[in-house]
Length: 140
Image 1: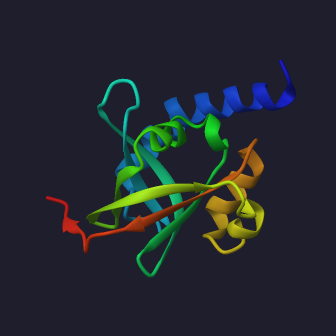
Image 2 (image 1 turned 90 degrees about the vertical axis):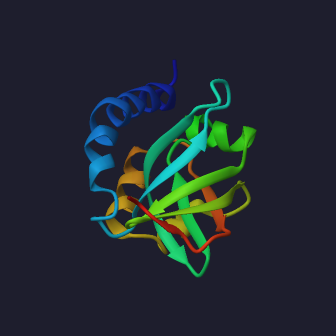
């Protein structure tokens, strides 16, 4: 097993069992923090993942730390229709992985703390663009 594979397994475990359960209740309270809802590629169930990024106009930009090895990216590949919770509103949209985009340059345009963590923990950076198509509905 390569260094990159070991690192990805450890980081995935930390995200799944420690960081994400702690981050989900904080979505909307930390600038640049959002909740991404994809449809599970095998189960068809809604899957929610805390993410970091920035809204620019009607486009949300983010960088996946493990690229196509991230479960939510594989879900996006299977069904690009997603929901995104920003602050207290849900938006629908279409997510697109952009393998030709310079993910490291993109991180310089996104919130600093999240970008630093993605650079530190990431193994295969991949830019994701989410084009939002609604004005958002308030979370009840």
